[in-house]
Image (cartoon, rainbow, N blue to C red; front, side, top):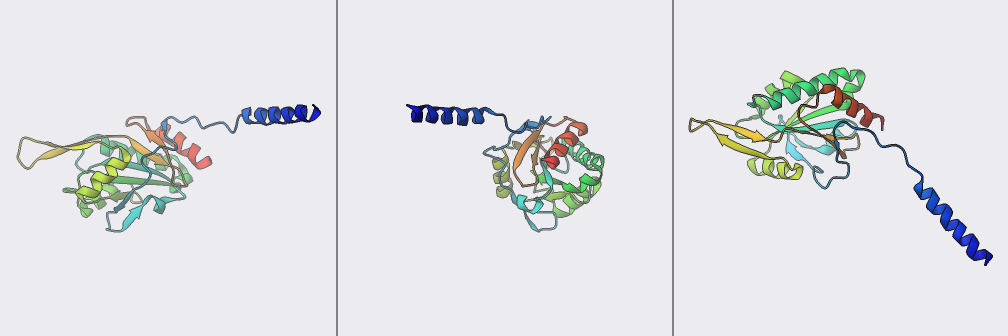
Length: 196
């Protein structure tokens, strides 16, 4: 009888220990997508033709955005905001990596991407694949994009998703930041990831 009582007390103690809260979760401004079954891999050449993967940026918080250089609004706004975030982080800005993935590889030549990145921050990386590689990368990240033909036969724009994906310093997907959330929200989220 005593051994059963001791066994039950041991089980109760174990269950009580399981109920103790762990460390508090960070209160992010962006959507916490930690452990998502997407946005896990990215392997494309950069603007210099060098093959890149997410593993290249380990040790930094990495922000990935899909867009195109002729985009009139969301793309330049997002990249300018990311450059502002890097400055607002002060010395920790060196631990932030911006990655721009073009959804328009037909027009976004390596030279165009180099010029585009220089406009925002020379440390930012632009990735450009073939049409097939671009489609595969967009599918992995659940990014929508589509060519929208203009009035002239050879003119078009690109409709595309406008959020950013944030990876922690270990290269794990952590956050989805909605377009228009603002630099302050992104700074807070990146600081939280750098501190964890």
